[in-house]
Image 1 (tube, each protein chain N blue to C red):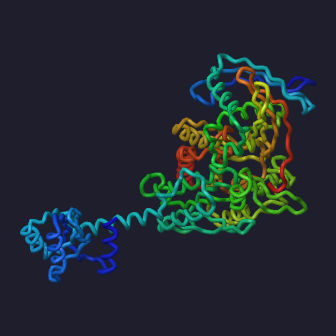
Image 2 (cartoon, rainbow over the protein chains, first blue to last red; image 1 turned 90 degrees about the horizontal axis):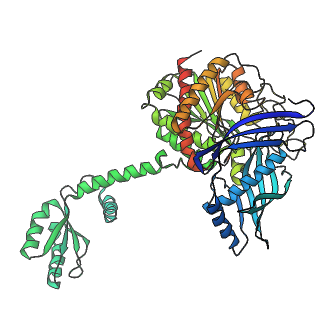
Image 3 (cartoon, chains in turn green, cyan; image 1 turned 180 degrees about the vertical axis):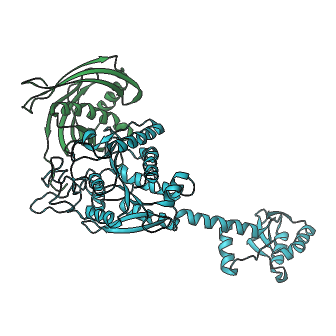
Length: 177
Length: 419
């Protein structure tokens, strides 16, 4: 407890590479949830004790593949009802994972626990510059309220410049499901 | 395929019992028209009773001839004396028929048996309800199907009863699928029910359990929700009951039980996924189980299976303070979780609901515990969020396989600690 400021948490984490279970990196972090105003994202400081794997090759392959598509990439329900992700959609899935991490961070409080549940819909938006742009409609699952929250996010990506969420907005839930 | 044709024809003709002992089928190759003519004549000799399975049509095209045992010698002498070459294609027709009959019976049984059900896929409610009937048919002395009530939309609430006899024996209750989107649970339920059936008489623990206790297994505890996850919204959690005065549908069936009902661990908003309902046991799906357990009067354990988070939980959810049997339940959970991890390394946490996951009131196991069922546990199966509710079907069998030893630990403990 930090008086008049908020609650600070000290964390020791082990990060596991989702694509290579044996590859782990230790990490320490400090998270400060601000008192009162729920519209401010928590402050996060972290230190990686080691290096993250270099993914340049896979990034460039994916980048070139999408750049060379004639029609804009469109997909829905990733994963599908049975948990399947077609192999060519896996990078789209991973990109959503990273981008939703930003959205989750920006909207987290001590009373939320978000996970990306599903990509409902994704559409590529063609650009004249070197970036790839995707318009995602995702579903976030909040473990605490058990709600499924639709969320729109616009994601920019480039292998050398990384991921950016340029726009995001929470969507209304349908009443009868 | 030729054999099947023959079999069908012979069965039609003769009722098939042991009429072809020693009969042979000869493959004959006539080398010219003269030999073809001779073969035709052979076929017309009524006293020999031969029949061509493949007629002699032209030289170099083999003819197949079934020869009854009593005519064998005469036919072979005829062929040899005319230098017509032949070989024995079938040494004993009856033997072949017997083997074929055995194979057909076996395959007919396999088609409608549990061994062809695909446990590694997610299924519809119809497929699971059909499979239940097959399971019961395959184990008529062990398993029966009972209906404990009906859902809001009037679907049957089925429970598989595993029993080797007795009268109102102490019982273990298992349920899966009370939250319909948790598909790994219904799939694990199907696999587990099959496993129990397979292991009775094979595994000493399962046998010991079923020799003195009954198991009741409700695989689809929320059929309306489950159908809805297939037809409309894969991520639907609640029942499908209509809420008066609201556009929002459904009640959280795991907040609707009369244990700490109505606290901060549930919602009063019908639109919430944690909506507790207008009053405790308002949901038919919940009331049916309440009535069953109370009516039975001798249920010693309730294991309610959910996903996801990888946890093994016990009461209480509606308050933070420890249950009276906290220590024993905690020790048992610890052992079960360790045996689960031994399979593939899957890590579970364990403890009371309130201290491990969150405050939750009106839950199944809090009610059963407060109503005399000491060994009340909730599982949260795989995973921890990477796929969440959309767990790939490739993980069904590994999940069920690793959960089995944990379930067995609990059931054995219940058996060995009567109360």
